[in-house]
Image (cartoon, rainbow over all chains, first blue to last red; front, side, top):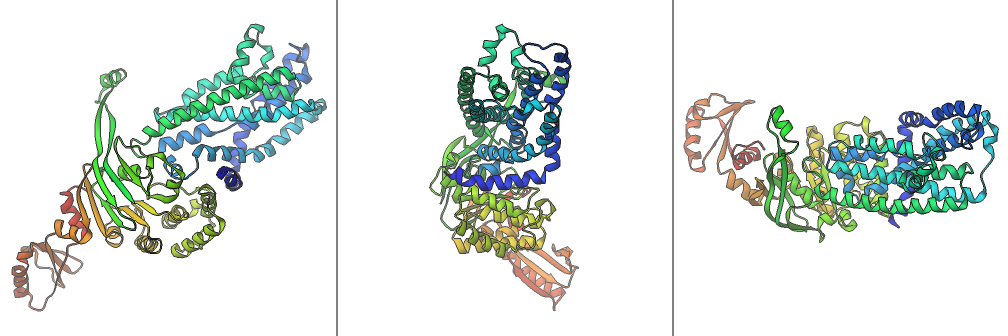
Length: 264
Length: 317
């Protein structure tokens, strides 16, 4: 209840922060426009002959959805929390009666409207180029998209929280996260639709956490999901979310116990 | 209000010898040593007390404050503050205490301090009326209104510290832990902070535990001194008793003369002063008056800095 009462004020102050850092935010958003580059590459590939059911329209729809979902689900918790643990500025946040991770979560969500404002011209340009993108998916898919994209965001947040918590033990955690990020780019559908992977790899891709962090909501938006695959995806997302919470909780509690050997 | 029993914190610190071979060796053979930052500390502080927690650098002051605020978990022993075990970080505990660290800030850097205040209202779940009353009082006492709406990055250190104090006290904590609250501030702001802390204690009956290298802070805020060195308590008693125990000497000050070096006086700013044992005061006074019959001589307690230097046995305070 306390969290719900606090949310409007946290949002408002976080939003003021986003506005103060607007230039940095725009640059940050522009650096995560990899899907547009991938679109240009794949467009050239499928222009001559469709590949695994992806023609120019499908591939544009796929990467437009990827761009949108990526913006809706990205966090920068790793860098923030890592810095707070390393410099000891986490101490001041630990003295407030609300878990610092909740405050960070609200902070990330408060940036969403600004991200959408920057993203909108890019999406409009894509629609102008290929007007068929405007075809909306089925109502059920849109309805499932909301929990799916939220879980994708939450999973990304928890993964970053877990890696950031390693800063309680290690000097640098960004290097380790880069390894994870490499795997994520390949296995989440960020660089290529997962349907392009060999048939034999599909069961494994289905149960790894990466798919639920991007491809699952993207396929809902692009009309490539069936109610059955959507349900399985939601189940896998929920499962990994539970695992993520447990891991972060364990790392956080153990980390706090050894926090601040000097200078915290 | 604050109770510590056999409170101990041991840090395990890696030891690395210089040289390439030592670096390679440390990959598989990591040598460590234990540092007893706080060693079986017993302490009881009652409600409304104002305690100066003193000691040389590395004595364990900040470590103790961090354990009492729940930021550090004790290696052994126990402590309770406002009826809670700090390491549990119970929301009611966090609403009862505050920690102001002169070298750390909670204000949001690129936003006006007023935004941090609003955020703290939300995070501490303060009722709007109580928040406004608290804020109005702090704005008045700390004279924040001229700069409360300017981005924190544009404020002077003194203005920022006053805003930090306000942010730390909006929830009206019952226990104040102040770690070097006046460090780096100019004389005027230091005085304002001291007056404010004393006034906050008077108005709210709050318990204050203060560490400071500035003895003016201690002299004007603390009524009781706890001296810690090597992680253990070396003295615990009233300020006056502290002066008597470690500052047993008396200080003779002679104004307007500077040629008393041969009698053990040091001169500065038109006055000469010397600290001697109480039974030597009369003899020295006589010799000064023989040389300067009209000299203006006063006998004073030595300044707290000197008392502390004696107490620390020459270590840097």
